[in-house]
Image (cartoon, rainbow, N blue to C red; front, side, top):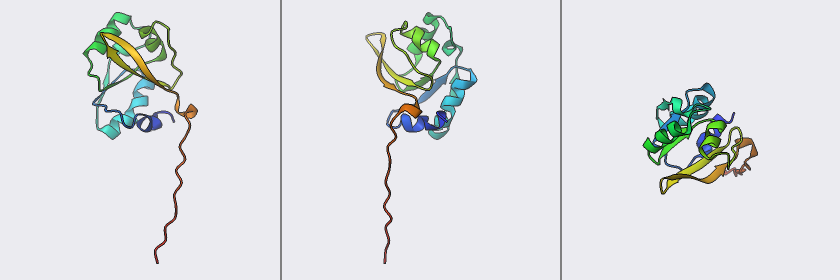
Length: 126
């Protein structure tokens, strides 16, 4: 399940607030991470598909840089006017620069990310 791997994917990123579209697929995506971080998932209609861009921008402008936002591909593509794409299950790290939102890194869907294999050695004591 992609949602179960979200905490691993975002390890190392400071997250102090989680804001999500109220639609089930978004809430379910961030719930495992919210539980780990002991945060509530804030449901906001401004993150639903086909929301007017001005409503989306107003919400984003109110959020701190440490907020995780879960929305839909359509909404994200509206934000960037179709100049970048997001695959189902993918995530973008974005930041505000000079009053504008800029994508800074893409996290592809978990099944497409290379997995790191951890080798464990057996240690015996005598």
